[in-house]
Length: 221
Image 1: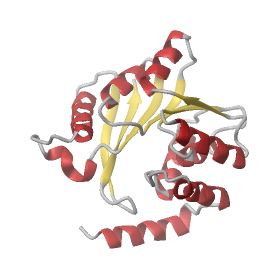
Image 2 (image 1 turned 30 degrees about the vertical axis):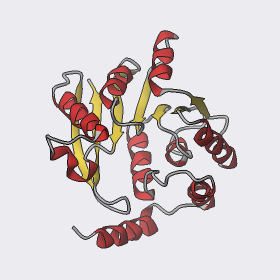
Image 3 (image 1 turned 180 degrees about the vertical axis):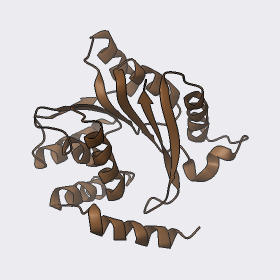
Image 4 (image 1 turned 135 degrees about the vertical axis):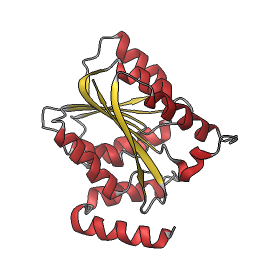
């Protein structure tokens, strides 16, 4: 593999079809300024999420793992003005920065940022009879990915698209003897996905500025 080549090609694609405006650029910069990890999706992945949202005509979106709201902004820009995004962030500091970035993007009316454990928020949404979502993006802590997905199914309808990020882990998912809990989490998730009769799904490998990983894509039956 040639990571430098992957990054250059990613930059080429970004320049052509996924350029960032000042809001997105400042959102990424805000992570450094706030000593937060630079683990947002890339611009090309942000544009990919937008295309998926447009293809399924999404109006209601659920995101697990807000970080600085970079992916949140990409996705919210792809839904109609009367659409809604509920995004969940565990870390209060991250949520504070995300809220500022959402406000700068002029999207506060469309984005409902909830702070807390994703598992707790999912259970609350189910208990309160939250209307089903058209699109769900899971990009949170990896060990409970399987549980997140199964709860997300309860908040879906036939045709809901669910995308889960970081499910290849630079190929480490092939290591059956790994002691990395994140890898174990996605191994368990990938196996569940393969045997889940409620969805039609696949996994795609990705390379680029964030090197080698992958996304799981599922459509609820």
